[in-house]
Length: 317
Picture 1: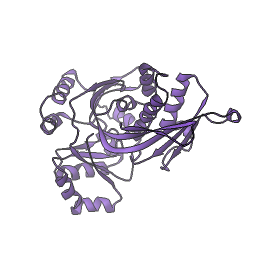
Picture 2: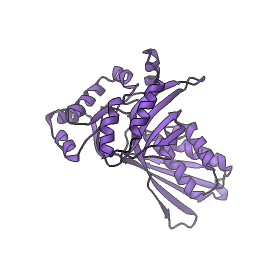
Picture 3: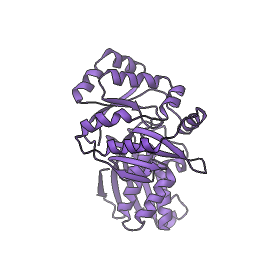
Picture 4: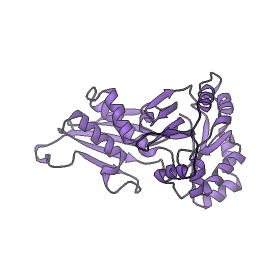
C-alpha cells in the first residue's frame, strides 16, 4: 500500500492517506474447519493496481467533546452499512484505539471507494488494513506489530494479507502469510455482473455441496509452482494449471452469469481466468495490454457492458 502524510493548516490535525488495493485469489482451497466452524484456507493472493483511497485524520479532543464519537466515518459509496460500527474501516480504528487505551483524540476516516462490494476483491478488508497502517503511522509504537496482526485477524480473514500485499500464500484463517516471488506487472482484466454474492452464503453452499478439502500433496504442488524462480509470465503459465477456486461452483449456482464472464476472458485470450474469492467478480491474467484492448473492443464484451457489467483494466501490483 502506498501512503503519504499530510499536515493540515490546523496545528492539531495530521492526516495519512493510504491507497488500499484490491486483490484476487488466483486459487482458493478449503483446508478444513476449526471447532467454531470457521473455514481454514489455503490460498494464493495478489494485490492489484485498482485501489480505494483511505484518508485517516486525527485531532485532539476538545473539552466540550468528551461525550461525542471517537470515530467519524465518511465515504463516497452508498453500499456501506448505515450503521458505521459495522464497517470494517470503523472497526479497525475502534480496535486500534482500544489497544491504545486512549480517548484524547477524534479520528476521521474518509473513504473513496473504487472497488465494488460483494465482488471477492477484498475492498472492505483492504480499507481496514489501510486504516490500521495509517493509525500506526499517526501513533508510532503505540500498538505492537503482534497486536496489529491480532486486530487484523479479528476483523476478517483477508485483512492480515493486506498488511503485507504483493504475491503471497495465505493459510489458516488468513493469519499465516508467506511472501512468494512477485507476479507484479502482469496485465489483468476484472469483470463483475450486477449481482453480488454473499460470502457467508457461498461458504454454506460449499459445505452443503459436500466440497472436499485440499490434500497435502496438492498443497505441495501449489507451493512448489508458486515459489518457482522462473520469469513471472512463465511461472503463471505453469502454476495456473493447478489453480482452482472451491467457492466458484457454489457461487455460479447462485449467480450463473459468473460462468459467462469466465468464458469471455478465456475465449478472449486470458492466460488464466477464474472467479476471485467468493465472487461475483472474475479476473483474467493476460500476456499484454493489447490483448485486453482487443477483447474490450469485441462484440461479446460490448454485450456484457450493455447488460450492466462492471469492468476494470488493471495489473498485478
